[in-house]
Length: 147
Image (cartoon, rainbow, N blue to C red; front, side, top):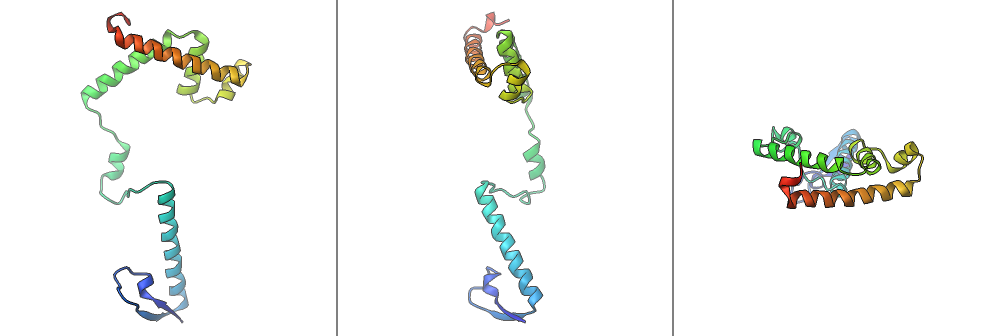
């Protein structure tokens, strides 16, 4: 039998209450307290200050984003402009950008598949992104000539 202070385990105790409990119960309470401390530290480190137990629909709402028809139309128009702008890039830059950002290939994988250096692939992607930015800015400033 071990003596424990209930104030250490239950926050509603305002003063010390010492009780004698079996060793298994004391070990179990200590284990729960350590697990709780580890959970608090983990949420602090990963900045996860939300709880999925908050509401019945929190998980669904966090995973399913319902867009309005206007947002869907705007997203489609934006995608069309982006694909038009990507189509205007030189072939090598277009292939590198789509491989990296759309297909998720690493720069070293692209370099290996092309048989070129990692630095040249990286620089090609950067140049392509700068050119893509300029093309998109031109499309925004002159919307009737972007067909």
